[in-house]
Image (cartoon, rainbow, N blue to C red; front, side, top):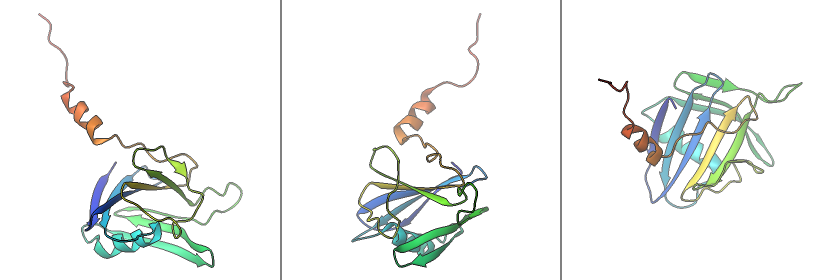
Length: 152
């Protein structure tokens, strides 16, 4: 994980993870009130994310928007699914709370985020999102002594 950013204000919280081909992963934690789709979350990030560089590109269709490009800080990927493998696209994964990641069967224009939603966008591979350890796991790593044990 390269960095984590927080945007928005409100009683509902969700996270959106971005995994780039360069190996960089970013986590954006969002807060809001009311209804918010996955697509509207991108507008929120772009409008309120002044602490970091964020841009996105998409194509609009009658059935919804198709994400084609994302830039965060120095990481950028763009693709529309060219032959023969058609993997140069942003693959959309979703989960609720601690549930396992699932490849989304709907687009981000149709996904309604709820408190605890987790979304992830992975570019250029059909592999699932990079696994980010839970905060409790990270705290346990801090208890493990680093270095060699001295013997007498």
